Image (cartoon, rainbow, N blue to C red; front, side, top):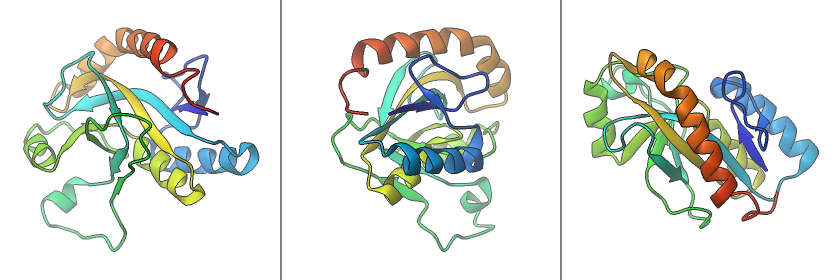
Length: 181
């Protein structure tokens, strides 16, 4: 099953699950209970911490949920905040961090890159966590729209249409038909 966030990021080959960590977890759980997918592939845009440039395509089987407060040692979490899957769906290019917030402080990038976290996408951690709960192999395909810096929103807006088109072409040529739904 191929899924995407929805709203401004939809694809004719993907089922929208909602934007952010909460909406995506709720909707994807409903899909898993009703449709029992054999694999889950998330497709979407991503911001880069510096290792990827706009319009690069990246795949991942690793997700994190790391907030800025955690980076600054202002908080802790008693739950696992990194999921690494080695089901072989994709080559593992990087871990994708997810938060309900978009990073606009470029200093965060150094911390993330030192820990092999290369991209951020609002939904991917939820996708990987739900997939883990249901025992479903999962991964993600991303097209980079922006760097995680003070220009993140304006660059995302300027690059989003082209990134969606590139992602659509990549998924149609390299993903659809490769995995059982």
